[in-house]
Length: 437
Image (cartoon, rainbow, N blue to C red; front, side, top):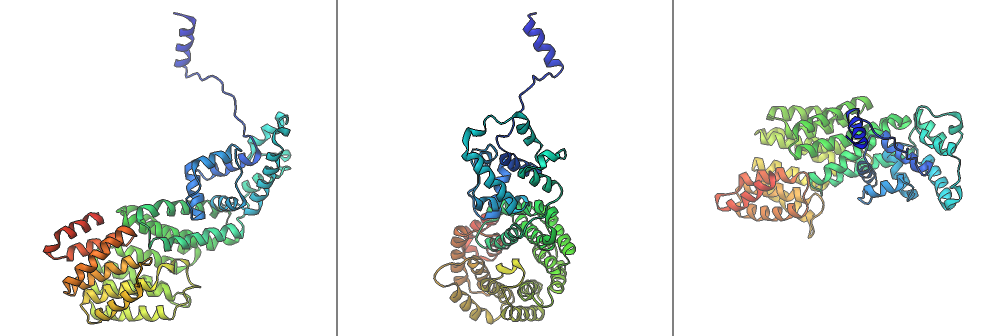
């Protein structure tokens, strides 16, 4: 046997690996960005998704994250803000380190002869072994501060909270599949920030719960029911931790859609109604009471349904929609029209005609966000009420609208309409069943 084969065989048996040269980061700031991502437990692709979730745009890519971490590029101050929010670190300190990095980059190769001891110190960034000499550097101070639990600043906290609110509006015009990754990435960003929340802990806990509730709703729409229930459970935990009952109402009201029995649905909604009593909860109460009216109508409780609907409309008319919980932004006039149509249609009430006229007038010539749900409920209401021709016509309009503007409510409406269509519309019924599956 040749010496080469002998050496190779022995090395293979003992699992030998030739020593590899340690690759050092080309700049302290690049190393810092790498450490922040690693502390969050994300891949480069996941880091890009988290930053996009905060920014509300899809411009960040895995390749760009790689360029940052290899000092091929330095993020702009605008992007630095999104990175800070996604990683739960102070914006101003991260911005200061980026500014220093830009100055170093401008010097080009002037620092190429930097002594190896200084270069090696960079590998300590963010580690538990960081020493006094390293902490004396600006980037070292930041790493040391982060390891000691630096608190997130107000701009970063506000960005996370505002983004949570925006996501609840996006569910009106995005499919569950498109929304899921964005919502879960944002929940990851808030979770990363919470250990450093400081004075913002309560607000960020509520934002985390709001985002988790929406993640549950999206999971339920995708048929991932166990996952949805887990999200609703953690939403209730956030509500308890923050001392914020309306957050539990959000989880309960979403849960009511998937409850197995009419009794369970009503129980969830009754508890939710208790959680949104009091000043500052009128819009939330309008939605909860409207859902209660829907389920009471489905159970044949006409008196209870009409009373709940009247209370819902009263609450909505007197609500201050700009100063209440962030997630109530999806409770629009179109959503209230939808609830009323659902109730009157199930009960076959004469008010259906005037309510339908009002809803169509409000939609106008275009189709606003939330209009798809109105069309779906209007089609169901007309079919239930016996106006088959009009119901089929609106159902076709709903089919086109749901295709153009898919949202998390469309599939449920499609399934309901399919069950109500006459035998002469079998092809349309098959289309709706496929859409709902």
